[in-house]
Image (cartoon, rainbow, N blue to C red; front, side):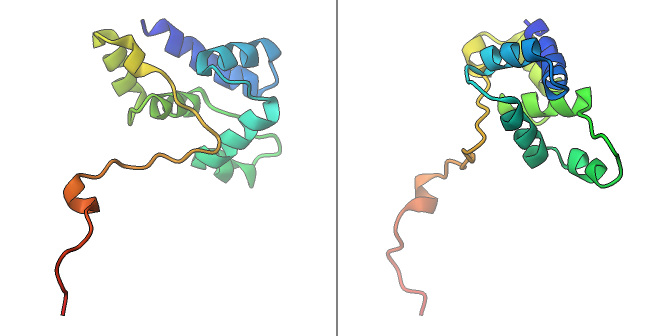
Length: 123
């Protein structure tokens, strides 16, 4: 089950470097149609170390470890290891579907007690 995540991470790096086949596979993985420019913008927005290297490197690059954390976060995990462990133990693989969106922001779901209108006075 983890093989698709390893392949997606490699494809993320290769697509960033301009590999059209890798971009096509990455689009299949995400069920989207990103262009090379979309992918580069997403990396710029989400990978802090990449932005830091941009001021020091003539030609910037995406590390495999950076692609792995992006994939893990897109599946709702804080780390690559957590994603792989969940994939190995998943009884419902649909829960591990990636949710990358270049425009959406993840909003927390708050309990009703925190979102209900106030009924008292603070004076």
